[in-house]
Length: 192
Image (tube, rainbow, N blue to C red; front, top):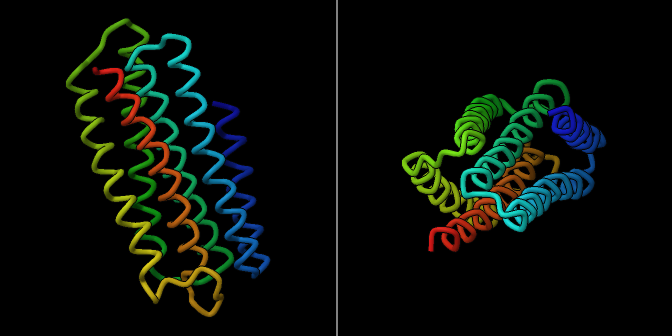
């Protein structure tokens, strides 16, 4: 937990400093680096768990924790960026949504981890999380495509008030899509 708090703090500080610099390209690079690093850590941990023979519950719990980390990273980045550095009036709605999803992921991770530690496998919860993951993957793919094709979503133009949020949205969605796709592929193989 301490390592997670350190990673979350450092990553949010990096996003804040890059937003404060006023250089959207630096912010984009930092946002991309942080969110993709989280995705790579999640995939690496899941691969290590599978190699060690961990059960489906342990892998699902780890996946949900990393998903929660991405959602909370996005929430905190939006909160600090738009409360103290930049101005965009709609930030708080996204902050609340991201924070709620992050907490939901962490609660699911805790419930699944308890089952794994006690040696139980709750197929109902695992099936529910699988359906939620499929929905999240579809949502993230739609978000990525929408952000890339929407002409009003500019990532490197500081005249657009939500430029920093667009970077957080895009790379957060890519990170969540990568974590989710990897988990779904593993889960399908494990269930077979």
